[in-house]
Image (cartoon, rainbow, N blue to C red):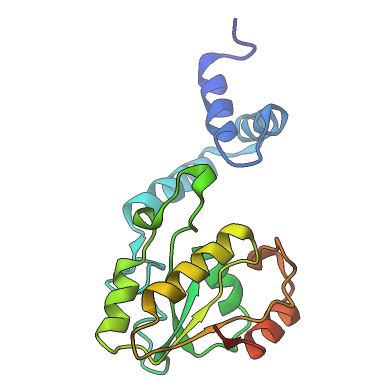
Length: 200
């Protein structure tokens, strides 16, 4: 038998489907919405959730998120389109972008090769990257996958895949801790890793 009315239980279950949200936290969120959120604010909140699915799409050029034909980075005429920073996730892209130091564009893989999770090269945004390199749209690829086994495996695969093309491939320096996640690092660590990138 449910502890709460069905509609509240359904909301609790919805919150529990989010990463790192357990039953107690989900209950707290659901009860807060019921008890403290005014109807107008609740409507705005629910519209925001609907909007991110309806209005946001992947940038066809880099895999970033956008509401336009191209993301604001790819459409910026001031960016160096010949330099591409390859990241695992959109979160990594925005972490690096927040430094306001990098002037090239990005390529979001949408994950990393992980045999334990059944993620292969076919699950990642790799074909369009190879196409850019093949068409000589890129002078330098900066591989910025995380310092994990999966991140390193993915970086090595990309290096092997693209080694015969006329493109400089570099890897960010790993003042990044092994097993570290870019999106959790401080700005100075990331900046030094970018500055210390090396031929890969």
